[in-house]
Length: 555
Image (cartoon, rainbow, N blue to C red; front, side, top):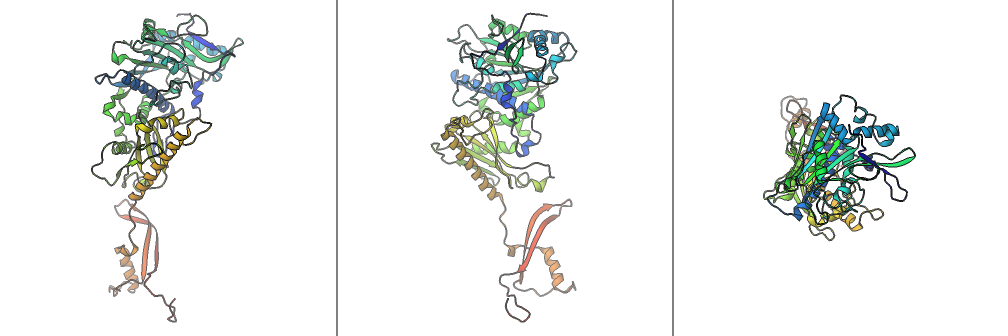
């Protein structure tokens, strides 16, 4: 094996601003929200975070590239998640090329795995065993690549892997904080990520079209009285603690050694990035489920040319099929109601444009969907499944990712909806989102969200709730007046009682009944097809009937 150092560890310098390499702490105790029915069969949080953040960053870059180099006939955007496993000689070569033995020795030198942010067991403990080495490759097509010279904050590769909270802030995109790497970190058991990127040559970065850089994201630690941040780079450099990315042919060579396809800057589809996660913490099923749950709006728009796929370790390709998911279909119906003209009014579908909010004349359109005989009244059609049902609205803006499934009510009948934000309010809503991009914040603290944007989000969400409540009221059946109710079986029993025990003689029918019957309760279908009414009935004298005492006085 090659014994030369591969990883260069960053020392803590008191003359510089410091940060722990364990950036995954940013998402500690921040679970992915799964309200109501979405809590059933939800993908693991690591898979949801990986799919949301990584795809969003790639899609942002692709949209930027399309604007800069418009080509209607260009290749479609695609992200492919591919699980790979290696044994025997292939495994040994990868252990060498990745410098895993060096990382294992580093763990031993520190002596405390938990202090580094690692778990009790991972591949670094089994490098001499026969266990397979598992990798997850995330490869994008036509993503534009992480271009920019390796200086300051001009490099998108540096922004993606090395920075935190620093952004060039491209207006209208999905992300704004550079936290996408947290999704990558949680996707690797040993917190090790390799990025190989290909882009067009640019004047400010002459002669370079490919770069490759590896990063560890461990916690700070000490070795031989020297303190380290926990960040290490796999690249080239003259000192022990700094490294720059490999470039062009050197980047291609290591990428190929790591099992990646070499990219050609002259091929439009190759402009993009391949990420490699060592020992993935996610599985193929959860990635597909997460892709369906959060990216179905983009997948439903043919004009976007947006595609996702997952290849499991057996080589089988899985495509997200959100329309086949009964929990997502109502949101898709609502999205279609919001984005297409509604020529024929349907009783269980509504389209509601949101009226002016502050300076935004047309902030967006809300589509809503109900199912009276189904999930709108779940207690009537299914057994108790332990789900705390809610009325939910998928919040969607320009990148066409579901920001959040917003809770819009807790009482029956339940409604599913999709709100599609207009481009005019897109930027304001983006600036209210927290680092996980999973909400439109309605309050500001210490100026982190501009008050005008927070107010717009607050008024918008309140308007969405009002429209949902109006639709819910329209769905409820109109109560029938008590005098219009006809209960044949109840009438038969009462006739028998009033007729003296059922002698067979029908009592004379009065023009008006002296009493009224007001039934109430829940109506359900029992096993043999009959209807069962469970509840109470109020029997009282009718308003027109005069009640007199035994002496004949009116009461």
